[in-house]
Amino acid sequence: MRRHHLLLAGIALLGACTDPATTGTMSAPDAQAAQAAAIKAPASENQDLATLRAATAKFHRFEEATDARYTFLFMNMCMVDQSAAKLGGMGYHYVNTDLLDDKLDVANPEALLYEPQANGQLRLVAVEYVIPAAAWTSPNPPELFGRQLVLNAFNLWALHVWAWENNPSGIYANWNPRVNCDNAS
Image (cartoon, rainbow, N blue to C red; front, side, top):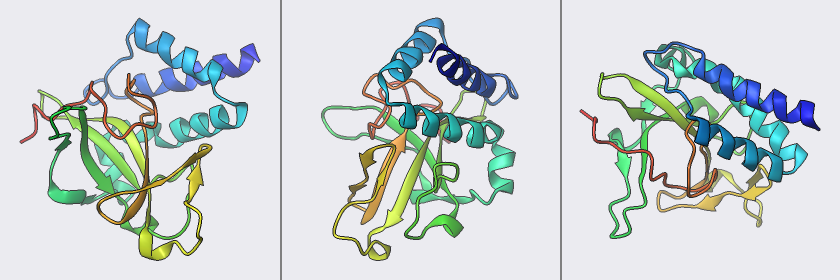
């Protein structure tokens, strides 16, 4: 069991070891929170999160994401919660439209979420799994990571996974109070 947690911690740190111009580093409290969350999660969920992080680590370099066809900028804007609750941000959603179908694959999220940085770079913070409502024919919502996707206002089944930025609201929450669009152009 301890080996499994060390593997997860290693994969999480691997993402922080890529190009320093486009990545942030995880603080000690964030690393401890991620480790605590991993300990509480079921083994299959931890394996899926490890698979997700390993598959998306290269996308810390935005050029890798565009090379992999994550080029469609959803809503053409950096997204933040505009409600009175001010729940946080999501950032820019770059979508690979080739993946928009009725299938979900842990290693191939449909969207990558980036937070704009003061230096003009984009920092990978999360991914989003998406199925267009018209493509989903089952009476039950699609599921991934042991969670049901939620039908949103854009008529998309969606699930956010904050794999690269600790989210005090939860790894699967829509908004992250630690993400903002202050540096959006």
